[in-house]
Length: 216
Image 1 (cartoon, helix red, strand yellow):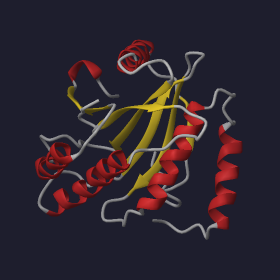
Image 2 (image 1 turned 45 degrees about the vertical axis):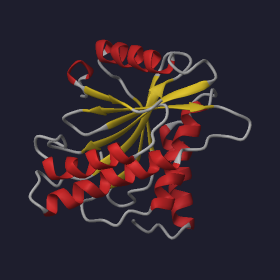
Image 3 (image 1 turned 90 degrees about the vertical axis):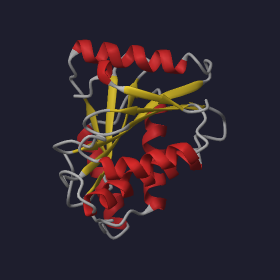
Image 4 (image 1 turned 45 degrees about the horizontal axis):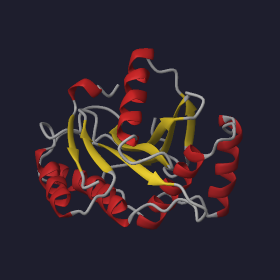
């Protein structure tokens, strides 16, 4: 569980599924009520800085087991820190957790749909690749990473979607990463009821098979 009370926040300027890592898994999560309340308050506080016509989401890079923090992954965080100093991040907070970094992102909602800024994709790509490079240079455990999009729906439900599972040393397809994130964020923004998990999985399996079902 991510502990918000123990996070370090940097302000910007503004279960792995090994067979098909790109398949989204939508979960109605029964979180601890206190944790869920703290998460909801933090997302509301974050979003309130930017206005009412937007969506606040959390994009989490979480290790499946073990630690992905600067204490156990110092070489990876050297790369991540450099990217943070170079990136032009608007409406983004970078939050450190023992289980891996998290981006709090505010996105404007418009008729043209949701567009994920290049700088955000760049940072996520850097984080994922930095962990592999860090492990090659002696950083800690090499368990797979999970890329997760989560937030609170308008009716107060917590919603979490595991977008991708990324094994260490697997090549990262930037196009697929961007498309998977954008789709997950659009589902997070959708005010209609969530698709049942079984139906979502069937639809995603059909799509993957249509694409050849290849792992990244």
